[in-house]
Length: 346
Ligand SMILES: *Cc1c(COP(=O)(O)O)cnc(C)c1O
Image (cartoon, rainbow, N blue to C red; front, top):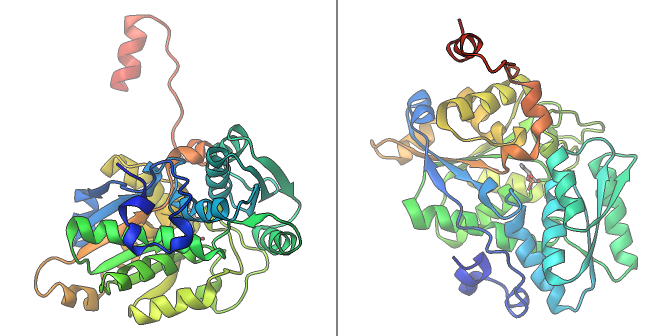
């Protein structure tokens, strides 16, 4: 399957179409979720963005941001990142023959994401400060050096990310509700852009972690804290646009606690066979907690409402959180009695 710029070339700005840098991102599975559907009495689908080349939706935006940088003749890209943007930028920069520097908050990066950024050859800088501080610093740096900034303040990122909405509608037609985790708020903004370009208006429900919920509280959070490291952001760059998208869609932005996130994080693999990272589980936690609104049900006109939960990143990104939330491995000697005990749990 071609990458998303080629597949949706008529809906792409010309800046990204002349020097395409792609790892055939997008075309991710939209998987029916029977157990979740029964739980919330709706037809629920999971958009598996963890199936992108570096394991998160960030690749959709990165193909566009790096293609635009390539057209400009850029030799280097930079970003601040809670992890997935770093992994993605590093991969696309490698593909384009550019150098890449990433600024990550010290000690707050999931192991898989850090391993990715390093193996793709990025210069990884660990900042003694949080994501919001890191983003401000790279913005200032990019203003003064010939380095292309590929955070979601880069508009080309949204052009790529909007294609997930196209894929959903192309595959299952109009939907009634979309639930999505919200961190820097670029992705919810991009989904809304995509739906509007397709003349669609599903209700958008954005979910933030309770310890990092600036859009819910209506004020910056100085020290955001949550197990969902990908959305540990206290001052979203796309604040106004995200709120406009939520309002226009007659949706809502709400908080879910870390306990609720972790419940969904464990429940989904055990019941649907789908393993996402903690931030992604916020979309499912929110749906379980708040259900499908009467307005979204009304849109379905008597049928079962169609709901999509966006699972933004792959569970393998963050093995430490997985191990913290599961039982232990059972040791066993090569002896049948012991094996029977181990297997049958007696
Ligand atoms: C980046 C990211 C988010 C948040 O997306 P925003 O565009 O920053 O709101 C959510 N989940 C995962 C896994 C991410 O990598």
